Image 1 (cartoon, helix red, strand yellow):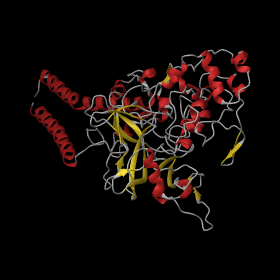
Image 2 (tube, rainbow, N blue to C red):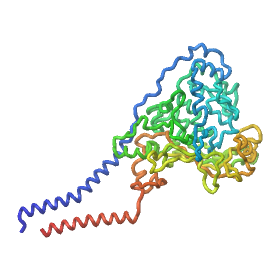
Image 3 (cartoon, rainbow, N blue to C red):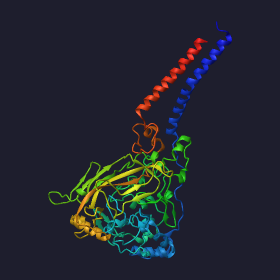
Image 4 (spheres, rainbow, N blue to C red):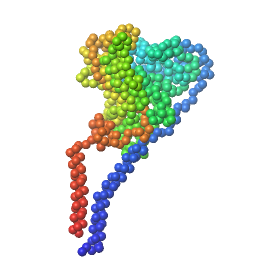
Length: 534
């Protein structure tokens, strides 16, 4: 017969056993069920932000701007008579030069940028200037002879027009028309320079979008997260730009100091300089949850908060130049479109693949990139990487970022094994869009960059990466834990680190479960035996 004291001791032992076994499971459950909703409900909030409210002088009162202007250069001269240091600021900017310092693999510093970099959209600018430079902030860049030191050719109006009437002509080397002219069914009138000059102000999103929304020849072609709809977007597409959201303008984030606009195009810029970061407004610890804030060390804000891009209009994901040159039976140029109106084939450009509401790819990125140079040799058995985003898990400066991967198939020199910049635009037969002769187009294009062409060409597969930074979704639509921490993880292609929930080994997983069950049963059995014997 057990005494009361022994019974009490046995009860306490049993209670201790119960606590030792059950409490950890209860604590784990409480932690899990409290943590998961936190990921859902406590995403980073958008800071209060007022759009640019800088006051400007009423230019309509300036007598200088009431004189008749016949050319845009005359307007520039009038602007610079007051803003007398602005020309030097502009001409030292990357928006004007279209190039920056780039250190090659051999350690040499060269100038590289939109001016001379190769891509897998329209491939390259050289020999195609009148078409490409319609998005330059200058006038008359029609060939390699353009004088970058001539301040009369600075275009002040393209960034500062507030009337919405100023337009450059698409093939005019950055110039507006001197008289009414038609282009692809659209009529371009000579701008009213007096009206526009008297109505200038800080750049609006429409000013920036004139070039950045339509790069590559059409709406949302290149970036995937920058499109004409940004001008009148709702917060479900972009919480920052949404007219029913924060209603910000581009220059609210892309601050400008002496006409040096912050923010470098990741697909073109090679160094981690002059970037715009979410943390500039949201800090490095934007969440109220500690676990989420730990993620910011290795995960960029955009990764969770931009789960989709190209939300309204589709973006181009693949461009195959090798299929160009097909005509209809009546010898007319062929144009095919999908059900959404996106061009899937054009005689002058080849075949396209478009996608809408796209899930990004994810890459490590430390802000630095390598770029393929025209003289670099290629291995045609592999896909050519036109830009390489640098970074890895072991790099303390790297974060996971969302990326649009654009695939292409473009012309190359089959003997020299180098990529070719073809002459596409022009009025004579050496331009592919005129003569449809790749051999002549290759010869003319390579002459313009002073590089050899063997006379033999082929087509090779290429890839280019465009990090996604816009079209930030409302916090309720951001990625959740299981999107990454699961077997079907969004990060399945990043294999240089262990990710809980994604990575596993069947043998060790099963062994762990078995050992856990055995341990539980062992402790329980041992406790019961001790209790019975006492």
